[in-house]
Image (cartoon, rainbow, N blue to C red; front, top):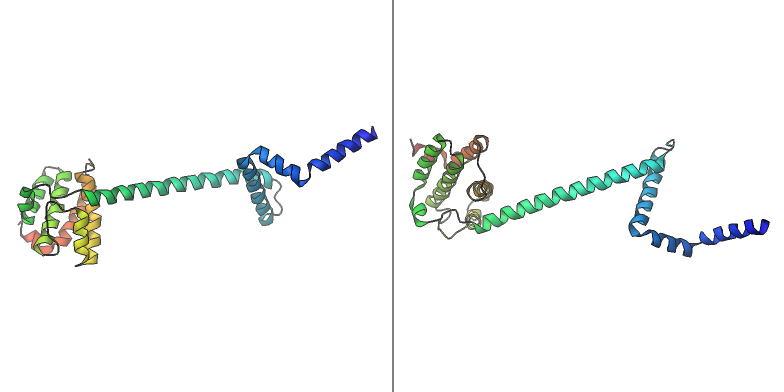
Length: 213
């Protein structure tokens, strides 16, 4: 009986040796091993911070799960922002705000007048489009850019940067909203429309507003 107990103890000691533990860890799999090590690390940190805690090991599992969930949510949010910004940049580089020579031949004053009519009909999406084109042709009249039917908003932004970085950045922001409304099948609400209209009117100033009185 003593020999049997001694043999069992010897076997236990052998299995605790490093080479056997490595094999055991490998058999559990990389993820399981990582999970256990992470739990042990968190438990040790909890014991350092709260020496009186009795269940650091069990608490570490819940904390580890919480950390993983937070990381996944942050990665998902970052991916969403990246995809949205990439899509917006592609729109700005590909879409042409002036679709025909007829649209190009309108004056910015006429676009303003038409936007007023559309606004009175509660057609905020089309009014948004006309306001943006009014701003575009206003900049053309000021010779800050050259309006052409083959140009994209990215081209206009690049031209404006050479004249005024501040106006270029504002144009870039307004172009995003315009393209969402014009090409993204987005129906503009009154709450979204009013700030956009205010920004356009601030750009045009008294000259633009007096022209449609």
